[in-house]
Length: 318
Image (tube, rainbow, N blue to C red):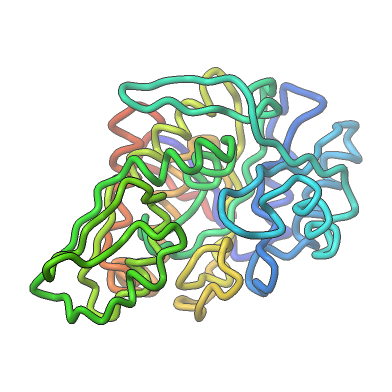
C-alpha cells in the first residue's frame, strides 16, 4: 500500500523531502504559478524553500508550466513568464512549455510538452481546490492538463459529453450569452450545441438552475496524466490550504470552502490525490460534490482503473 506522508507543518514536509532519492540533477518542478488576480494560488515563498532545498544539494531544478488555451497573459510563453515574475517566482529559472511528442492511449491522443517528455524525474507541486468540471483539482489534474500543449488542452475539454436537462431550464439564455466560442443557441425551445464547443464549462458554471452538465473530462485528464508520467520517477507534494471553490485558473477562484489542513508527500500520484480528498471530506464533508454536483472520486477511480496508481494509501503523520 503506498505511503503518503502528512503534516500540518510545511517545515516537516521539507524534512521528508530530504530523504527521497532524486535520479536526475536537472529536473522540472511542475506547478501552477497562478492566474492574474488570484490571491489564493500557492505562495511563491513555499516554492522558493522547496527549490532551495534541492539547489543547496547540487541539483538544478527549474519551475515549469505550459501555456493555457483560454484568454489570459498565460496563453503565451512571454506573457506567462512576465506574470510569474510579477507574482514573485523570479528566484529560479522558469520554463514555459507547449508542444512536444504525441502519445496515445485508447481513443485519446495528446501532445506532451517537450521538457516533460525529456525529463526522467518530475517534482509535482499541486494546490488542491475545487473545480466545476472535475469536482476537484489536485496532482492528477496538475499533470494531465498542465503538462500538455495548448492544442491538447482544447482536445481534452472538447472530447467530452454535453448534457442539457430541459426540465430544469428557464430559457434565460445565460449559457448562450456566456459561451466564449458562440457554440450554443436555442432553436424551437431546444438548446442546440454547435460543432465549435471547446468544453470549457463556462456555460455550466453560469447556468442558474444547473440544467447543463459536461462529463468525461475526469477520464481524459487521468489518461493524459498516465501518458505524461510513463517511464518516469516523480514525487508529489499536495498543499491542502486556501481550498477554494474554483481552480487557480480563475482570476476569481471563489470563496475558501474548507479550512487549511496541511501538506502531503508521496510517490504514487493516485494515492496522494486520494489521501488529499479523504482528508478534505473528513474535515468538511463532501464539499466539492455539494458545490459542483460532480463526484470527485470518479477521477481517482478512473486513474486507478487505467493503471496510473492506487487509490489505497497509508497516511504517515510526520
